[in-house]
Length: 346
Image 1 (tube, rainbow, N blue to C red):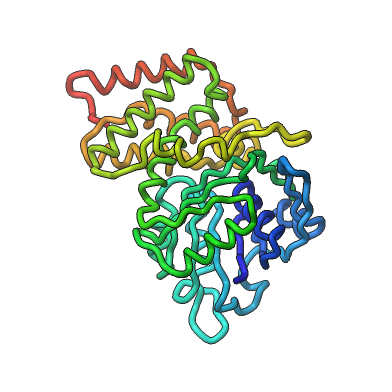
Image 2: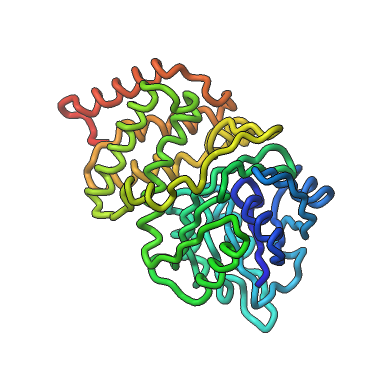
């Protein structure tokens, strides 16, 4: 199988490098300065066991590949806000022997949240969910770090909305043969993705007010997460519990400091640091806000973090530039407002 990694940033680049290092055929898809750096100098992957340069075919879109192959596997690793554009570009791509990518090829959504695969299923017939537990950083154009050991990551895989098949088992086997991933094949991958979503509710908090490193920040994240759990429970959405997740991860994906590749924060923090002007809060905290409105559960904390994260992205503010005391005050005000008689429920 040939792997086409659509979005060779932090997550996509880490998966690409490990697959290529194990001898698999990989094509990188990227844009702008990152595309130019990958094309000209290769993918530089910084990991605890060293730094590797993989010179791989790099394209901006499907036209540069001509007809896709029947054995191609598409891995969608762009941020959710970029999903529609990627689907529009790759769905109609012709496949050798007839048909299009949307009709014939498998698409694995290696993304945070749950919306990407919903969007994908509107276009692609064969969609697979990936619960991405893979801390990684887009260091600079052409350079990605994946600072965890002994594994680079744990990737739960399954068909969307449910089930398994031979394709997902083959992909899982390729990931595990690299020696740097566990890739459990599960019939209920969404259960793991919703659990990861609850963890990702802290991304906006980190992006706005810095690392969740003290008691105030941890307490605030606990309130944000509790709000998310209340919404998922009201919606009767099942998710893996904290202890179950800990049992699976153990000490398999532990952060290791890497020279020349500092990890300032997670995916949302990195979006602000790179000044992209966009952030995925609408599909993380915004997913909880949406479900809260659908099921009559107030979500003032997630509403506020979604709004603040989008404001920081739009105005190109520095990540972590809000004081945690100011953020706590705003969250208290937001909660008080929805508790006032006659206030909107969310």
